[in-house]
Length: 202
Image (cartoon, rainbow, N blue to C red; front, side):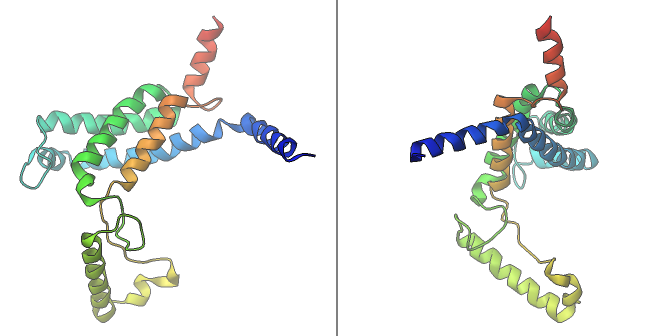
C-alpha cells in the first residue's frame, strides 16, 4: 500500500467515528452548563454585591446601568445553564453567553494577562506573576510554621496556588461557546435535534 493509500484508509477510519459525533457537543454543553450554573447562582446569592461591583468605578467595573447589567449577566448564566443542559435553543443562548464572556474578558481579566493561575512556567508570565509566586511562597512558609501543613497538603493531592485572574478560562469558555453556536447542540441528546426532526419532516 502506498503512503497516500495508507492516509486515505486512515481518513476513512476517522470518518467512521462520525457516528459518535454527538458526544462532542454533548460534552461541551454539560461542561458549560455546570460552569454557568455555579457562576449564575453565585450572582443570585450575592446579587446586591454584584450590582455594586458592576457599577463602582473606583474598585469595580464602572459599567453603566449596573442593576440591569447584573440582571442580564445573571439571567444569561442561570438560564443558559438550564438551556445548555437540555440542548434547547443552544445556538440562541450561546450568543448572550458569548457576549458575557467577552465583557468578562475585557473588563475583568484583560489587565491580568493570559494565565488563570499564577505560574512562572506558563506562557505570558509577567512581573505581577513573579510577585504572586513570592506571596504564595510566603503564605506556604506561614502555614508550615503555624498550621498543620501536612494535613493541608495530604497525599500530594492538595496544593496552594495563587489566582492570576487572567483571560485563560474566559477564552476557553468563549471558544467552547463558539463551537456550540456554529455546530448546535448535537444529535440524539438535545431537544433542538428532536424539534428539528419533527418540523423538518413536516
